[in-house]
Image (cartoon, rainbow, N blue to C red; front, side):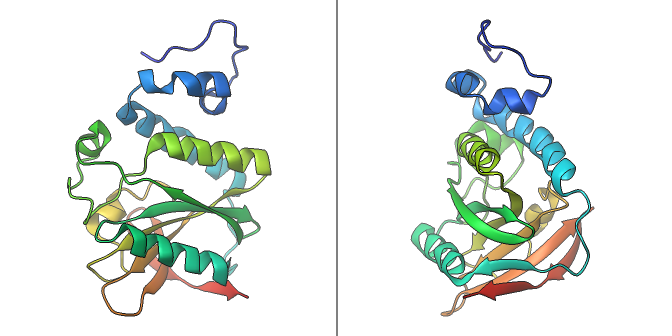
Length: 203
């Protein structure tokens, strides 16, 4: 059971409680697998309420610096997969959050029924996700994209990627290191249907 301080004024939103500093200090009592499930439920609700009506034809825009940061992150974590979040406003990415890929013995890995080997899957550290979402709320930005790497395979969603694509209004970026030159491709995954999208790289 998660301990919530009695002297804290309760919010109507469990997500607001999760993002509060006092609650965050008690997070370890919940365990990573519980946190992962809560994050999936409440960040999806929050994301839908903010972006819900994504305009068709509006292209995700990312600066070359952030593109380079993602590639550097992927190369640094190889041969394991890396993962992270991109946030911004009006489809323009302004912030990158590099999130840890949980170790194979973490309970969340078993709960999500993914391969234990980090070379072939990613499961984001839920505590680091909470920090990222808290920063987004403070800065007034919103989740725009989720990225991860494929060190040994093409830049295309795997069956596991599709099954765990919880955020239908979010772009999914995949960085492939399979060839000498890294490749980045972008997708929308809605009801397990994959649609390739285009990004605009800003100077």
